Image (cartoon, rainbow, N blue to C red; front, side, top):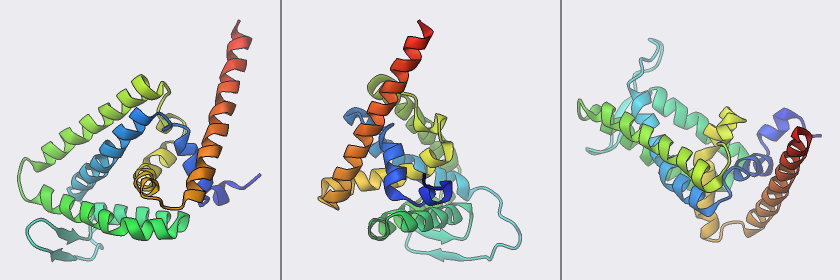
Length: 201
């Protein structure tokens, strides 16, 4: 059996786990809309968190709507990017412009108006609610975060990015393999649920 460390950087293992919780087309569509919103609003909120005094003061404006600062939002984005790069390098490089624009626009937005933090927090909450509805009404299964909080939260943006890439024809071999592994995982889970149900009778 693969070690936990090796599984952490195994793209097939990680995406099979995530895909088993996001198999229904309606739920996937909700996540494809809400996950980027969650990441953007999280970056906006993280921008307002105080940073240690030893953080270098780096501030670069790129027009009125994009701002880079070394803060918790940018550190968060960099750490995510590094993890995704270890999982699937080519897909991560394709994701880099989107992640950069999301982070820089979120930082600029929250600093451009006194009510923008409140608006970002409200949108963040609505996006979470929409996803829980997707899991309950469409997927009919509890969210992945209840089984693996770190994996669910960290993987979500990359999973959505790969969903878009797969629709454009990216790595059909990987998509086919993941689909097969997700189906096998769902069958295993259903088998376990049946066994539990029989024991309770």
